[in-house]
Length: 158
Image 1 (spheres, rainbow, N blue to C red):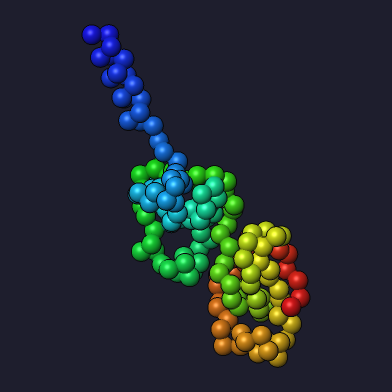
Image 2 (tube, rainbow, N blue to C red; image 1 turned 45 degrees about the horizontal axis):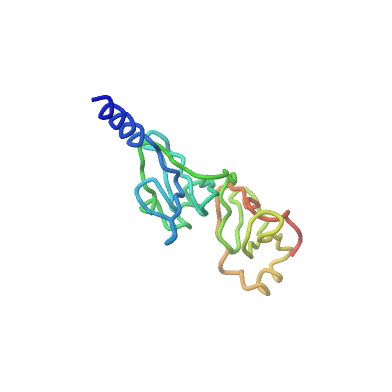
């Protein structure tokens, strides 16, 4: 009888064990609801997080950025977030040309990686330079509070 009670206690303990969001197997992420690579938010919170690597995630900065990531249809709503690893802060913007809606400066974002070892951001000096770089008709206007520098090196002149 005592053996049955011990087994029941072990079973109840494992039933409440919470797997990490980026639980990894030999075949890659196990993409079950609330786990693995993807976009997540808790039902009671509007904040969307992007689990982009096994040990890293970031917060989507605003609705415009989420649209550039493919839209809110990609966001999995969960009862409880189970993100894995380190919070990298605000998510980095995709490569391209950007202007904040509260300023005149245009920036070019390019490259991959994160932080000082990753992509770069540079400020376009003139309309001629923007044309030379191929961005004259491709500038995306984003909210003024957008952190275009997130996950990139410091802003430098192009």
